[in-house]
Length: 152
Image 1: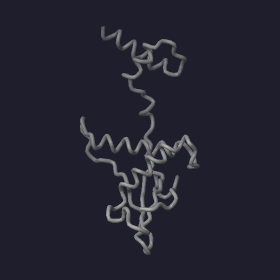
Image 2 (image 1 turned 90 degrees about the vertical axis):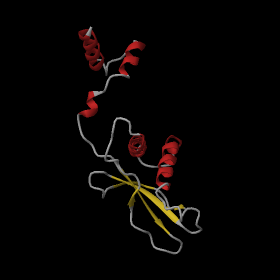
Image 3 (image 1 turned 90 degrees about the horizontal axis):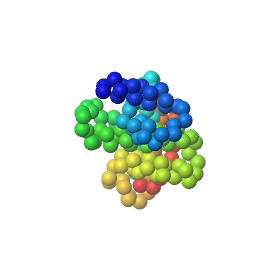
Image 4 (image 1 turned 180 degrees about the vertical axis):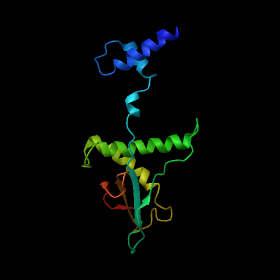
């Protein structure tokens, strides 16, 4: 029995790129990991935010999303943070931010995520401004995207 299961796993993994006609094979693929996912380690882009009080200079860029250090089997806060990082990475992979309808949802999600990093005392304050930026995770210097200046 174990050999049959192993054979199905191997066939499904090798058959990944080929055209699949069986809906049962498609359902089985959900249970199997894509081993190509583990081929390379890549750093995720980082979401930063800066803000300015009314009639004040811009502050420094602050990291808006941090990766949790301890990930246990059931870690809802860590899983939510990793999902947030996935949204930021998706906006980067969608290409240049042009406000197209295809980007509207992802762009709004990233803006909402960044807004959470703005201090509560600045939210709703007349004249307060903020801005988010996405930088490359490797060096932290290469800017991949930047929002326009937004009202707090």
